Amino acid sequence: MRMKKRMNRLLGLAGVLALWTGAAQAAELPRVVRAQGASQLIVDGKPYVIFGGELGNSSAGTEAQADAILPRLAALHVNTVLMPVAWDQLEPREGSYDFRLLDHWIDAARAQHLHLVLLWFGSWKNSFSDYAPAWVKADARRFPRVRGIDGAPLEILSTFGEETLRLDSKAFATLMAHLRAKDRQQIVLMVQVENEVGVLGERRDRSEPANRAFNADVPASLVQALQARRHAMTPELAAHFNPQGRSWKDVFGDAADEIFMAWRYATCIDAVAAAGKEQYALPMYLNAQLPAPQERAGEYPSGGPHPGFQQVYQAVAGHIDFYSPDIYWPEFAYWVQRYQALDNPVFVPEARLEAGPYNALYLYGEARGFGFSPFDVDSLPAPGDGAASSPLLMQVYGALRDLGDMLPTAQADGRTRGLVLHAGSPRPTQTVALGGYLFEGTLSRSWPARTLETQDGAMLVLQSSPDEFYIVGTGLTVNLRRDPDMDARMAGIDSIEELSRHGDTWQTVRRLNGDQSNQGRQLMMDPHNAHVYRVRVHAIER
Ligand code: DGJ
Image (cartoon, rainbow, N blue to C red):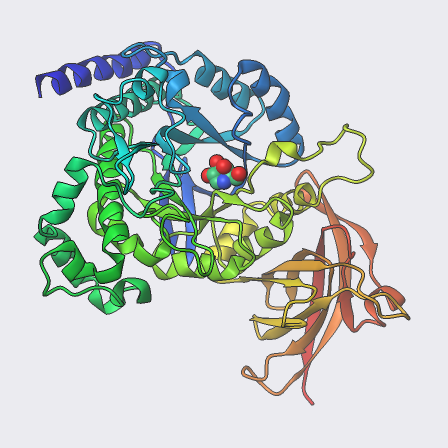
């Protein structure tokens, strides 16, 4: 306790010192809100949409990498970079913290007008503990490991290590206190606490203290908290939950090992987050590796905050603001919807880079999310690298950023929709309804052969006035109809323009007519590049 007080005093001093330096701090902290089904990150009083990218795991370990990578990402129209902060680099010797690397990244990001989201790679990163400092890894007595069914230690720190929790929390709190003092302009917007936690290779920790806790009763507070969520329980949890039981096996049946681990990770990570928030209360979230179909706990990280058992975390971890999926599986929309069903704002911190441009349009348009961030973004070729055309993700981000404030405003008003299509998927067309019209997308085909011109297509539709829509997309042909649920009128297209933005004004690059609009009947997008189209429409009596 005395130790904690001393630490707080020290950390408080850092804040006071920063105030002395007179650096201006934005008035309010970033916060995440939900506005009628849309998610918003409020920065400096205004909605801020994250057009993000997560760095590869070995891309943020030197200052030179910041200088080389950040200008490239800014040129790719990324506005926010998700970057790891590694415990072992931050605290190479116990109690001695080195912020030079992080400070350099913050300064370099500011110079590029970029924001950052920090990923705290502390005790756990993808289940394992390789980002823990060497002095932690080398002392398995003080920092015990998870043990397998054969009693052998794994390279995973145990959630039962008291010193592990204390020192991870202390390092994280020191990081947050430093940020509060250093980052007066709020370059850093949010923090992810640990990374894709859970036990890999085993279903649960079988170290001695873990076995003792597993053989004791389930804490009554957990059972009660889950009972309170009974009406909205996920099918996975409901299938196992027996509130009448006492032991972990009685209460959670076959899922006992995994739910026990979820409870342990949630408890520990909540304590780490609480220590950090006490210093600087940025929004904090957890990411998860999602179970593939047919995978068993332990093949994916057992006890991680995936949607099946996320309610255990929600019951325990009051300092975590929300949960986010790392979506590497094909069913992007399915996973987003599962997180929405659990009341999470929509933010995807990791996703497959190749599918990124398409899924981004779904995320901002249909799921009305505030942020998307495909993984390994620094591997994309940047302008000037000699590629024939700019990466599609850059085109999509550029087009969406051109929409400016129109995008978050329309998201919040329910005036956006979006869809994605892939060749070979069971659905050859998809339709969304907006503002009294139906927009039916199909993948672009050549004329007259009618062969597919692309394997993927996607669009975001934004209604700007009763008869005007901005459509950002690629690879689709869009048919427009009047929505029969609204009235019996017939819809038609007045004009289609391909736009580009110059400062505050839109310029018409092309008016799409004749063969390029199927004689005024369809929006025929560029099959390979993303653009902003403005479509003006009318509805007439039959
Ligand atoms: C998920 C992890 O969170 C990332 O750090 C990275 O390892 C990716 N998987 C893919 O390799």
